[in-house]
Structure formats: structure tokens, C-alpha cells
Image (cartoon, rainbow, N blue to C red; front, side, top):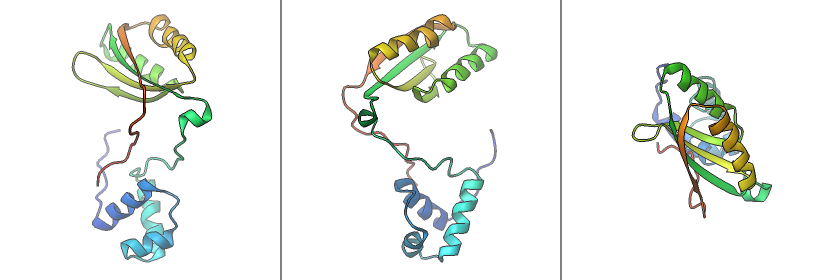
Length: 157
């Protein structure tokens, strides 16, 4: 998706800063903080969603409170970097619900995955399907997070 990003003015940026902290803030409160009318806030938010600037409205869960306490970072190096092979492995990672984030990166490794699992047994089963049985993985390195210091997808505006 190589679309030109929409132009954002200062009002848009202020609104985005507020809703990325808490997307439940009432339009009235945003209106007071940004100094625009409530209908203007509603129109701008609707446009920002339609244009894809706001990619999703979601609740952030505490994984350990819902039985998914393990955060695992995996470095993956592929065997073959042909486009079809890379597309297949991207699709595999995208389809796996335990993969929270996936980055195709430069350097000695090809992908970095951030995964959330219930336990090491679940992760071991995933390694079989994602890395061993499906092919095109030369090697992978696993890092188990001992403590979550910060987890955010917030963008500095």
C-alpha cells in the first residue's frame, strides 16, 4: 500500500495525540482541549479513520491478566529471499494469532517477531509449524522477556 499520506494540520495532530492516549475521550473534551467545535472534532476523526491515519480503535489488554503471560522476541533468518518465498513466510507470520508484531529488517537477520504465548509448550508447538515444518527458515533465535518495561505503539507527533 504505497499511498500518499494525507496532509495533517496542527488540529489533526493535537486530536491524534489525544486519541492515541485514550480513544474513549468524549468529543466534547477533545473539543475543549483543541479549541474546535464538537462537530468539527467528529468530522476530523471520521476523516482520519477513513483515510487510514487511525488504523484501528482497540483496547489494550494486560496479557498476564488474561492468561497469556509470556512475551517472546524471535529473530528469524530465512534460507531463500526470493519474493515468492518471502511473501509466503510473511503470510505465515501474519496468519499466526500469537505473532503480535512482525518486522522485515535489514542486517544479519530477516524478521523480528514479537509473540505472546500462554507458556513455553505453546511456543514450542509454534516453532514446529512456523519454523520447522513450513520451510524457508535457516535459523531462529528466541529471547524470552523477563519483564515488560514498556509496550506501546504510540507515535510521537
